[in-house]
Image 1 (spheres, each protein chain N blue to C red):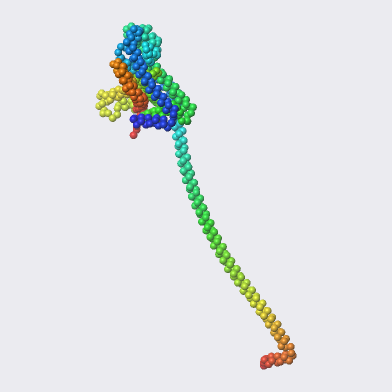
Image 2 (cartoon, one colour):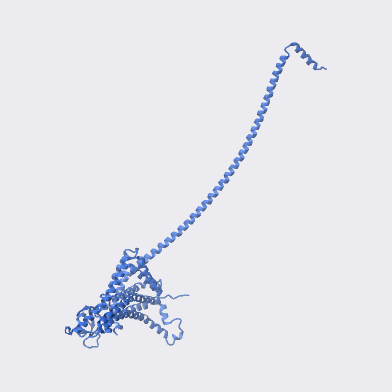
Length: 164
Length: 388
């Protein structure tokens, strides 16, 4: 029967130390322990969160890097193709110019050749005339060295001239 | 509930493995060793005592008048003496000498306080200052209507005080470590206790009371759990300062149950009391002419802590009784023949070791159940009205 009869003294001696234990542990043990656990958990949680955020940012950064790279490539391609076009245009233009120049040069050359030719021909003609005159002079000198012959010739010429 | 428990045990085991704390393993090994040795010590001590009793009964001329000699071994009496509270702490009997720790007797009688050592009562018939200790109870020699209020520091009280100091020492030193190195990984005893504290916080308090209000009850739940757990474990160790049947004492469990009742009652919100007076989901005729349901609910307020009280008390007392029963078997058979006694002792010791191992599990489960149910009652008392 004693086993299931709670004794008054024991109730008192259980309640009092238990209450004191509860108060002391609450103040000096449970509060710091629970606070430390909570702090540690929040710091771990925050660290994990921060790591996640950093990862996300890295991803974003990588993405934007790729975007930038892509844009740069596109720009480069555009610039290159523009340059190519400009180059082609320049080449084309200069070709045209060169051609024209060539034609012009050729034309002027032709003209000058013609001029030269004409000059040469004139010169030749003049020289030929001079030479002919000289030759004729020499021949005439030679032919008409004898006064008889001069007379004969004049007569001959006279004969040819028909007076009316 | 069982899943919770399993996951809790798993957590503990996993954390042990994870920490790979050699020191922790050696602690637990030492603990096991101590308690195995101790349970064997108890058996042999009782054996010795019995043997000495045998001897003394044979050689009657040695008897002192004060020395009580049991002629026959009475298992029931022996078990009861061990399970209930006592005014002295008996450790062992060597020959005729009882090694006991006398404890202070404090009595309140007729408006006066009497204080003296329990050793002043030499036996059941020897009176001191007009009081007599009879079958573990102190009463006045002169029959009178006045009752003797016994506020003695008994075996159980001493064990309670001892466990309180042990708990303070353990947890304040652990708390200091938390204060010193708040961000570092737990070390030593801290790594054993941290999973338990987190288990109580997450699987008991948070899941039963709710995220918002659990913090208020944490100190009580933690104190409750560790007080019960430590005393359950100390109860398994048969030698001083363990071995007192603290949690198997109905006064102790009653105080804890009453604390839970008080906390539930003072924290009960409007919803809680309305549900008691006007129980929802019950036909009106159970409430209106005769308030049957309210009466049942009000009885329920009392039965909940009553069940808490009885469950813990019965489990722990039963564990002690079974172990003592196995010890008694040795002497019962031993009184038939010495050889039979030795033969049975092998079987008994094996069973005692098995029971003690089981009691370690029970020590945890009962502490867990008491804490969980207290938390559930707090949770029920503070539940928020759900507006749909």
